[in-house]
Length: 216
Length: 216
Image (cartoon, rainbow over all chains, first blue to last red; front, top):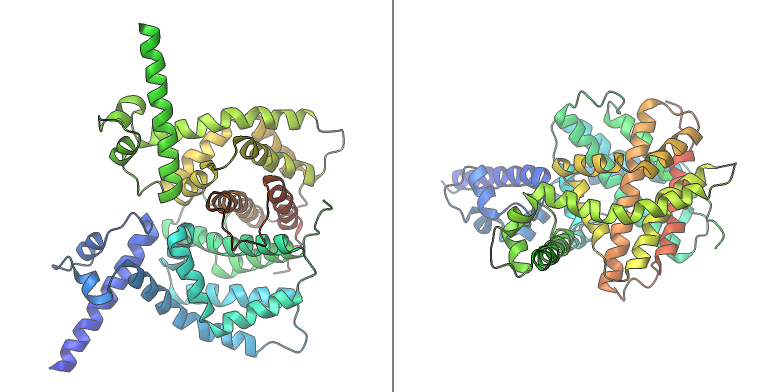
């Protein structure tokens, strides 16, 4: 009896989670209310989000944790497979590929890339995304390796390239996810697979990090 | 009498425009209703947006046009000042500097950079931003020059770098505008001026466009 009830609670939680992720991805985090999520998830009770998660912050965090639980082991595997000589491109690949491999494994449509892009556009929620990142040990190792392999850069250039690189990853994955979901026929010259987008993104990130700094 | 009335209409329009821009910049386009804009702009009549602009789309367009009217001549000037040999860095500078010079001239706080970032995150409104760009002759000349100076790139790489470059400009300017507005004391290693951010952004964009394409 208790077990049946737990299973039902889990099903409800999972349904709220995936519904919320889709709505946030399509409309933005601020634009979607807990009530809309409950309605779209077929919850008669408009307080279901509050009951199961607490509030919007906790709901966002649960969505992030759900996916990171799957991405983290992929990143750990890639890290463990690195040879003795690791170049900047390898670190960047360890940053990008666990995500693109994960999206590839989910099939179409996914919503998590657009969800992350929306979360990060909103300063209130951005902090949460970056805090969540710090609990990912493999991610922290990759970033340490990446920073260690960079040429010397002035502090403000380093800080700014870091945030440009994050934005590139977030928005490029989000744009590609959207183009897959929309199956936009006008996008004839677009990348075709998550591995295409991985290669294009890694090349561009190497370009950003290694770009000469102009004299000022 | 008619002139006084026209002046008053212009004042009301301008107030609605600047209020809407600030709210959109701070909260996102989808999260802000016409009613909230009217209230924040001290309009007793909740239909003032409708009356003066038509709807949200027309309001967004009016905000874009207002700023582009100022940015376009700056870009035209830079274009006219180009020497006979124009390199990729020059074209990219013509893309970025008219915007950073304009923001510099406005003083702090500005909202337009964050406004543009929000507009472009929403596919519904993104189209509008890019359509507005096509009526800017100077901008179109700069883009033609830039594309003409690029190394040969596969179609899907070109398309993807193009959208990465746009996102870099939009989000880097928006992030910097926010850091200025918040005067974030923790951002000790951040860029200090619009001309700093211009240089950092131009270097990184050159890096993206000239990055070697890895064999696939």
